[in-house]
Length: 58
Image (cartoon, rainbow, N blue to C red; front, side):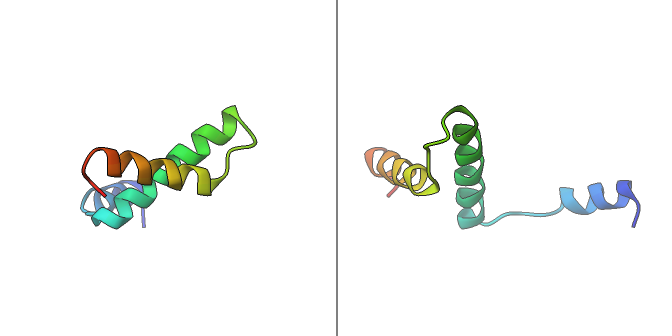
């Protein structure tokens, strides 16, 4: 498959809400880990949970 075909196929993908959440956690973890090597995935997941609860989403 050529790159333009792959891009077109990717444009049609619709992520579920759990997939979107997992993607956000992964991005936040990767970004935070660059800045602070002590950050764990669990810390990011806890922060997301607390944020969601504080904003009425949990």
